[in-house]
Amino acid sequence: PVAAAGEADDAGAFLARISALRGGESRRKKGGGKKKKKKKKKKKKKKKKATTAALKSSRAEAEDGDDDGAAVDAAAAAEGVEESEDGEEDAVTTEGDGDEALEAAGDAEAGEEGEDDLGADEDVFAGDEEEDGLVQRARSLVRKTPLMTRYYLLASIGATLLSAAVNKNQWPGILDLQWKPTLMGQVWRLFTPFLYLGPLNVFWLFNVQVCWSQMATLEKMMYKAPEDFLVMLLFGCGSLLALYGTLALSPKMLGINLMCFTTYIWARCFEGQQINVMDVFNVPAELLPWFFAAQGWIMEGELPITDLMGIAVGHIYTQLRQADRIKSPGFLRQLFQGRAIKRHYRRLGQDFA
Image (cartoon, rainbow, N blue to C red; front, top):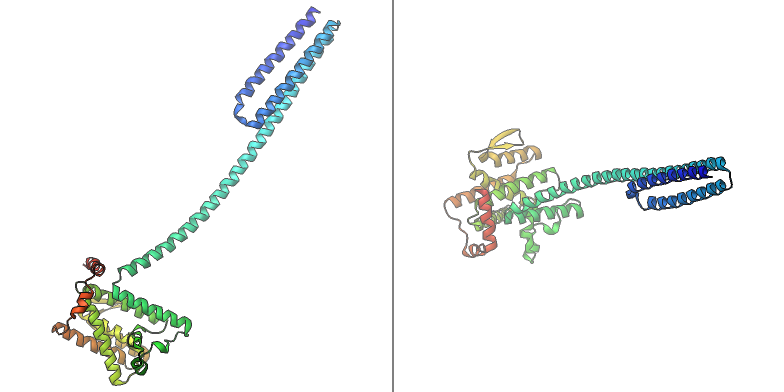
């Protein structure tokens, strides 16, 4: 009985050491999550119950005189407890590893989805940036264009686009110059014909570009007295209307006439400079309006009456201005004395300088 009790005590100590080691291991794995902690608590309870049951049975059998069998059974019970604990531990570890693997896979998928979303967002952002860049450039171009040139071209472009959309790309008759309706009160007909720079096509784009470039430059050059630019336009429009009325011509091309008028004045301001034409050859600035007239003659096969009329009126204006015969009236000078207008033209003067 004494020997059996000693062996039982040894088995109990062995199991106690095992439980101590298991407890230390469980403490090291403490940060594994709530599920693992609950499973480890259940495992400890099972282990204590199994150990207690094994010790009781071994001691009871030892007292009855079955010393050797009790020792063997105690060892077997201890081994069974160890195996059960190892099995439970392996199951918990396997389950934890599986959870970690699933979490890692989920994180990887989330990362891939995040990268895809990030790439898509970058593409969208790049597209938005490109669109924003175009809008900003357009706004900057409009803002840097002088006031009178800006509103003239905006009105011309708007009327041309509306005609293309509504009237089959034909200039509407209500905007044409007809003297009888004009004398009846439709005074807008005196101005709207000058907005027509041709039907919506490639040549229209060329006319708009030439008109914008030359009119804007002339208006900037007159930034100290912008009313002089308005007087220049009024002189050109009035003279062309008088010529059309006198010669009984169809006033369909008044916008082209006005462009030729400003082109001639621009060319006289930049005499001696070489102008690059479509990156093919250079033309002296003073010959540019004649080049446009010859180009129209070749392409249309008709004498360029409209171009020649614009050149003639431009020459008359240039001679009168050089002789100081054309001056802005006082009410126009007063009109351009507003703070906003003066600030606008002062800024244009700085850019132009």
